Image 1 (cartoon, rainbow, N blue to C red):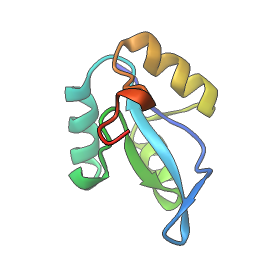
Image 2: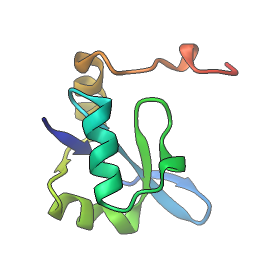
Image 3: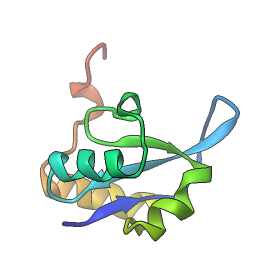
Length: 90
């Protein structure tokens, strides 16, 4: 089990956002998010959007900080990736 987080680079709502994913299980991702106070509404099919201010706290809690490229590569390898064209409304 590895929980991954990338750099907060995506702007919205007055802050930058990072992605939090699992490399093996949505159940472990949800458990990690819940244990670390991340609201369930932040979940977006295969990842959680988390604000920049949470990055250091989530790394301290055990998330592995990786580049965005590495995060996507490992998410695809896990079989958990939901492609943009497969997302509802697209």
